[in-house]
Amino acid sequence: MTGFTPDLSNPDTTGATVKAQPLAELQGQLDPDPDHHFPRVDLQIFGGDTSAARVANMQGFVKSYFTQQRDVQQSQKIMYYLTPDKLPVLNSGN
Image (cartoon, rainbow, N blue to C red; front, side, top):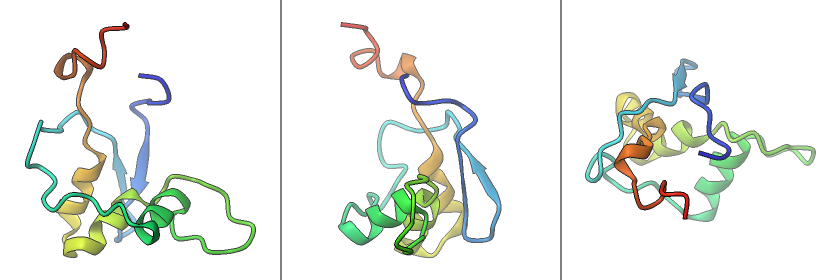
């Protein structure tokens, strides 16, 4: 998995660190679907920093998902990922 390491994390809205975990299910776990509109993607990429000197830190994914239901535990599920064995087509190396 290029660009992915198991030590990735994001802060949640309480300030707790949410680590990436191999707990993703193939469907239905993220309901509703994460918001892909510009304001939420901006939050995901810049972690809420709106300054002129901001730098992409990728620290806003949990915060962004939290805005959809205001549920801390549900928002943490955005950090779940699928292991390569669950994605053989994408992991075949072809």
